Length: 365
Image (cartoon, rainbow, N blue to C red; front, top):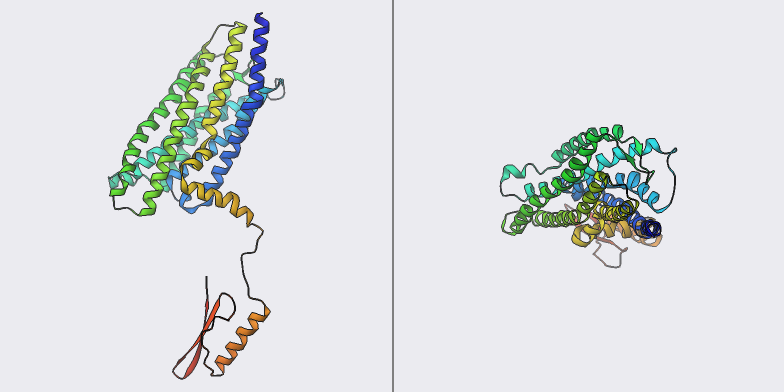
């Protein structure tokens, strides 16, 4: 009876991974690609520090989803033995996860902190919100978290028995740091920081209408603040369950097959929620920001539709001949009056100055 129950749990886990987790992972990867394209396509976004943090977060999430999460999801859905082929890649995957995950959540915290500085009344704090500072801070935190992830490449050097695509560590000290430090501290501390700055930014954004700011800048700050706030709320609701369940699974020493099957099912469900937390940015921004939605429509639809079309409109041969004749008449001293029958998009007129005729051609935009 217990063996049938365990078998059914693993079957449910496999079916859930195949029909739910894999489609969500693919949609998340596509969404992160679209987010990066939209942020790079608009100059206003490229010159805004908060948008740069959000774009950097999308880049880190995309790297993690492609080189780590998709690999784990496929191994959970299908029974594949990766033992000999991808052992070193498994170690490299832990390096990617540890560095990109913390870099992405740090960029999210920096984005909401940047919006707090941008909407603050103090001019000294507003100076922290600039694109040059964003470049330096993003590069610094990326280097810091890559160095922090090197021990994961060293100590996670054994393949898991339940999933050969996952590396585990037998070092008890590093295992405790991984559980209490990485999952339970970093996974919950950064969202808490983001929530605190989010509340203060929301309070500042409500007072933007009473400040002497440019209308376009106020509207952009409001939309970016709302984008980051919704992103934080979704992250808290989707990633924290995964960090708790993964931390409990790591500390669990009970080898009961029934309990392990239950934990594996819970882990794949919570991991699916964590995929949503890492790949939801494009869909959230589409729903929240009018400017992002308009730019996404232009880049992904209208720009692609008009990619092969020729936008230059040139007058045909007959119209060019009419224009040439009128210019010749003007040079001969004739007075040409403005007529709408001239070539489409072009108006002409003649004026006399100092005894000479002067032709004026205006190209209408």
